[in-house]
Amino acid sequence: MQQDILVSASGLCRDYGRHRAVSDISLQLRRGEVLGLLGPNGAGKTTTLRMLTGCLGPSAGRVAIGGHCMQTAPEAAKTLLGYLPEIPPLHKELTVSEFLEFCARLHGLRGATVATAVSKALSACGLNTVSRQIIGSLSKGYQQRVGLAQAIVHEPPVIILDEPTVGLDPNQMRQIRTLITHLAGNHAIILSSHILSEVQAVCDRVAIMSNGRIIFDGALQTLDQTGDGPVIYLGLRRPPALRTLAEVDGVTGVEALAGYRFRLNLAKDCDPRETLAQRAAEAGWGLFELREERRSLEEIFVELTA
Amino acid sequence: MSVTLTIARHELRRYFASPLAWACLGVVQLILGVVFWLLLAEFASAHDMSVQVGVAEFVGGGLFGFSTIILLLIIPLLTMRSFAEERQSGSLELLLASAAPLHAIILGKYLGMLSFLGLLLMLIAAMPLSLLLGTPLDLGLLAAGLLGLGLLMAAFSAAGLFVSSLTSQPIVAAVGSFGLLLLLWLLQVASASGGTVAQLAEYLSLLSHFEQFRRGLFDTSDLCYYLLFSASFLSLTGLRLAWERNA
Image 1 (spheres, helix red, strand yellow):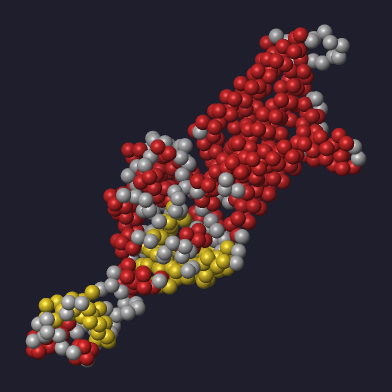
Image 2 (cartoon, rainbow over the protein chains, first blue to last red):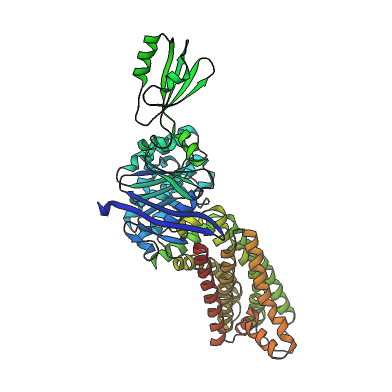
């Protein structure tokens, strides 16, 4: 199991002058995991990713990729990496296949494997039809795909993508997501984003960053259980006193809303809906609405990063 | 080593994929062609002068001397692409995140640049050599001049590469390299005043070492000067990139 930890960072800090952009970040990623790095702009996502890829040296802490330390054995570590920065690093005066060929060689592929790797990356990213076009003449979506192809051309076990779908139209976004899901099987993928639905769609684990720190790191499902518990919205034509509602088992707080509606805050792992329905029927409260609301990732995100 | 060559080949290909390289080659060739023709006309009309100067020295040397001015103008425009422009467009990350070590990146870019300038050197050499059709030439003198010009290109490129690594603005890189090269060039003027400072200025000047080559004099100390000059600026570039990663 130890061998399967592909990315391991511990105590990463990064200072820009006096400003500490990232402080004390520790991360571990196994093969097959897709980690979504979430955070508002300026939270330190890009800085963290640049440190993980060796583009930026950390002020403190260490990074190891596949067991190779980025500080002492950068070449061995970087061979295992594919990185798509926020702005795709493209040489726009070249054609797509010329550029990818260079990337394959740059990452150490030689001889006949170069052509195979390039054609694989071209078809994986849906670039076959434009392989002979100059990159600069392609649309933003295609350029982004070339950037992605560049990151996977040498089939690295670790793929790091910094906002891979920014500036794409919904169809292109979906294609990129499909591709990422496709790659997920035997790679470790980190992708940063501030688009929450994207993270929900492709990641099985999220790390939320705020002010240079990771404030949540865990499976998507466990995110629901952080912070406040679930909430029930209740609509009653003939409501009883608020106190009566507050006394129901599992209800921690009651708030009256407009139009005979109430919001009940619940303790964790409690579901008093059945009890409420029963009591409403017995006492003739005139129940017309009863629904539990799970908080969306967006609400949790706002709550954690605000 | 093979990564270095991969980068060098890629850089050379990029030069020719952009109009800049073609424009540089075309403009330089046009200007030097005119200069060559003027020198030749001057030599032909004044060949009965009392001072004995051969055609190789007069036309070849004159042409090489003029080439240095053109190189001073165009090399900063070529080196500004290598780091400043790549940093601005974000494509430098491609190299920084790759397994290629820093020295391979710098040497690769340098070699790519020198290959391009080598081609320019061949085009320049072709002009005086074309005179072989009509007259014997002092080939040793021309060879020394070309070697000097090549070394000057290497030195200019190394300094330009360093300035390019300092900034993310291509234009600033171009202006900065031009300023640095012109300053090192002008030390020649300072050396005219006499005294110890003047001797030092003369030694440091990029041009005074070239003068020897141009006159057909091959001196290993001049060769060493250019090699040391280039190596120093390449090392500085390496330090600068390493610093950028860690500071």
